[in-house]
Image (cartoon, rainbow, N blue to C red):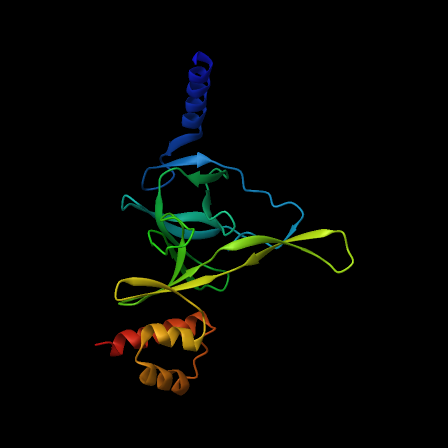
Length: 223
């Protein structure tokens, strides 16, 4: 029993030492933890949404906002990390509610948690917000590590693949939806009007931006 208590005390001390308050570097104080970027050895593909550090904005669960942070998002682990002003890779010990940055194509990207999808994800899992109006369109940006073996080969190849899942929140209910016209229209209703809008504007609902345009139109005609 004494040995167990001793180990528990040592662990608590080490854990506390790994978490510290970030001061001076940013306009808001928050707790951070030292982390190592996960190494994905002998695996094809990248776990990151952005290979290079992207300057963005982080909103904490307590409502404070931190600007001009160098961010990376690991889509395999679901972890958001940042680079401190002295070049160290750090994680957030305090809960982050959302973050945003512009990708390499200068396209704004917004990620938020707190959604209850009924899947294996938790309320701290991040979803990309593709449209946020009366209707909400979310994309789960999850990447997974898959294994496959070439024909007549004993070598197992591991690859990182993106397996996005889409959700629509209509009238307060969050629904998992396939990214095709039939599935989306079955959730939204108003099929005739929406069908005409899709055809008139030549929307490709496999494209996220076109799908967001449809949500904007849907909200404009929704009674």
